[in-house]
Image (cartoon, rainbow, N blue to C red; front, side):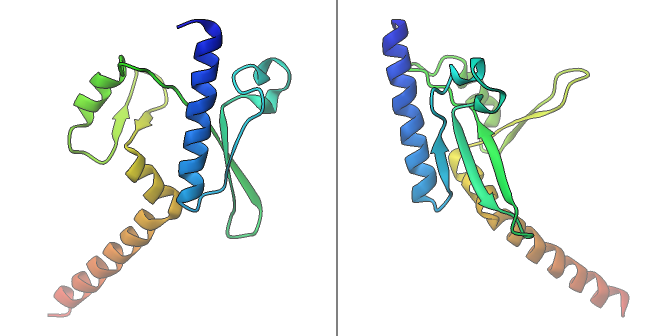
Length: 135
């Protein structure tokens, strides 16, 4: 694929992803000049920004880098390793772990659904633990 065609494809995929985030109720914006922006300003790296307000009402931003491959080369191994798991942790020696996950898991995390589920599980576990210790 030529450089121009590759850039057009990258922009198309970035717009598709922004649309998917917005459909899920997650505020997202495509970075202008994505890919090239890092040469102009430090805060222009990445392809997409996810924006929300934290509990204190302060603006939070996540930088997103996106990659697309027609054949999925490089992705197939990750998908095989993931199997039926919800996410895949990757750890290189003396480096910070990485995480790869399907879209559905990412959306649940960003919306706080997994956190709410975990809090409910912890509450139930605590209640059952206290009821067994009372016997």
